[in-house]
Length: 231
Image (cartoon, one colour):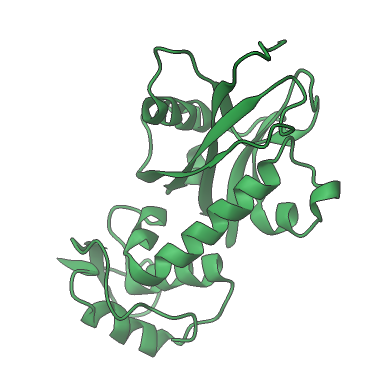
């Protein structure tokens, strides 16, 4: 729709990341109208004067899932994007939010809504990006934020079910960081970092082999020293 060029419109764009089939993936939707018709885009919504930014981001996450109840997730404000040329319809300032979610295999998958591998979307230069607007830049910033925060916060747990094994948690780090981590070193670091993990007292054999301890995300907001990508 045409926009009033006398004032800036405000939009919320959502970078919803998950791990699916051993890939870091982002939720995208195919645009049905110009501009960028038939291009893939991040879930996005122009907000009215009465709408709250965070509530709108939560609404977009709910719409993207296609589920009656949201899965386990983490959501935070990522950044603001205000290039005057970012939307050919007029001046639009976007407040982007980053959401990390688990259980993505249950999300509705249609020809116009799907999970896309982050690597496929970011390996192409901006000029050839299949993403509409400046959504490639927003996605790249969201991925960079996620990779960085996994170093010094227990945020990796947002990609896991409510309870998880150390092996499952290590897999999250390996997929998001794109590295191989030594299992013994990671187990030692994860279980010895105060507040990183909270034991549940239960075990599971879903990893195969001997029963493995189940954990929840601990109560630490940050930890020091941070984890490194060369554990």
